[in-house]
Length: 240
Image (cartoon, rainbow, N blue to C red; front, side, top):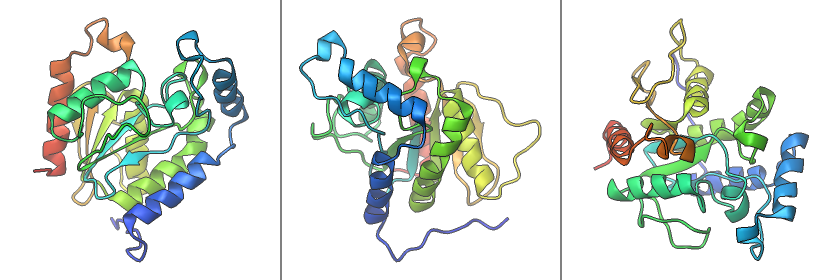
């Protein structure tokens, strides 16, 4: 199996910035465009004085990252408001505390794009870049977003992927499939703590329940469980 390599002529930070610009300008999915802009116009009462981002949300993090953290999509009043994935919502509160405890984030909280948060060795992205109605992007919307994630993947060449939730896990498998990897049949199934690697030269996938309130408030996902998944992903990525 031949693994495609990204050109080394363009610095990774510049290549990622170019992807970010294309993401922000994207209007490929009419349903998602209408929803994200309506949410930004109407706003939630608690954020009525905020200026919402209301556009697709790009990935962010360390351009030398060995670990790709992959989520589902921006939250309507989180990333769609702040312009940064997992920022300004309860899911992000859980994730950034865990990343901070693992030494991968400079601070345990993230409230807005300019709050000083930096990631070390990690890059955060999502399967879908626009906030979808009911947090459920359609399959064709995920397909339209996939090239952005594939570009980030080929620029970063991560050693590990931490997939938060079933859709992110499927997106991670699709990345390997796009590299020409022969995925086993039946296709690997999502489960918290699942660890999957298909071949040398391709990243290890570590699966975790998504830190959504549906999971954290019910105890389906605890901080100890999330810490263990982050630790496993950090180890698989070889981050000292």
